[in-house]
Image (tube, rainbow, N blue to C red; front, side):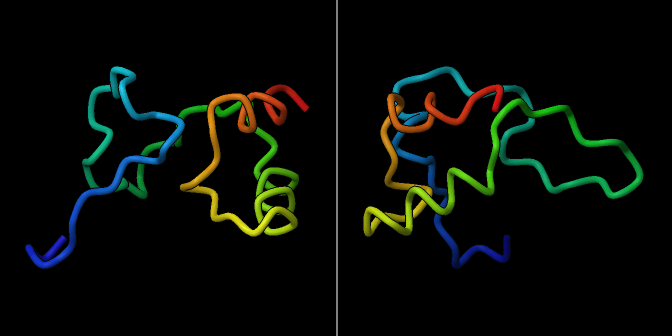
Length: 67
């Protein structure tokens, strides 16, 4: 970040404790942690409902866990 951007937390994470290093830059030399969310389906759902991924609720995101 160059100081002009604001840090944004997705709506479904508001009020939740964020993992350590959440806002740290990505290290391309370290494997990313595993994720159990089907992002392809999540993005398609968001677009179909006129939302961005940032605007989804916890319940909506939960529909795409472990798919």
